[in-house]
Image (cartoon, rainbow, N blue to C red; front, side, top):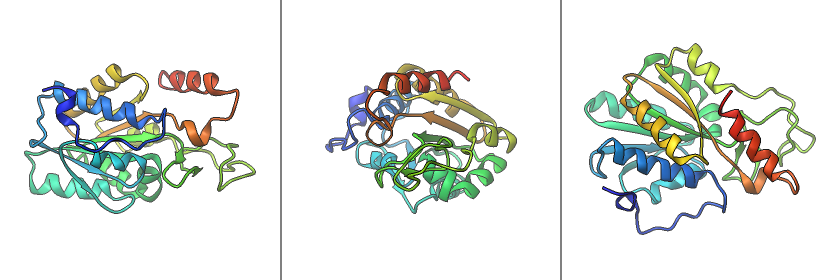
Length: 221
């Protein structure tokens, strides 16, 4: 198997520089390392830019309602416990609309591999405040700056006793692929917060390098 075996005939439509490209490439590398073929696993997708991966990743897939990929995946695992199930979600999808399901899944410890694309903004709707947006950030929905403190998904997952919790960076594909492999091989629920970039709707002229440097350092905290 090689990464091209997981490509469909569709060309990715993500914005240039989007972290979804890194997540897509990392997941394909991880599937190869795990010995998974396109017909031997299922990926359940949420709604958002990350969810478009259902069109670009050649593997069994299901995309449901916004914020509900986890209950769908949990249902699949309960019906077919031998099937390897991945969940690809986003910060808005998982920590906003799907927060209750995130907490329930972590506590129940379903044997799932959850990958959350956290770019701190609602990207599909072109840049509104998300649950993980930093305080003070100006977006289309908060032009004067975000008032609330951002959700800390790593701390929340640990508090809910998820069995495996990790954080990676979309710009480091080899490391991210290895983390996905470790997560999938670990029994029980898995919360994986993927720190990603939203180049188009977050970056402002003159701060690109500083922003990317901060993102990389954030993965080490």
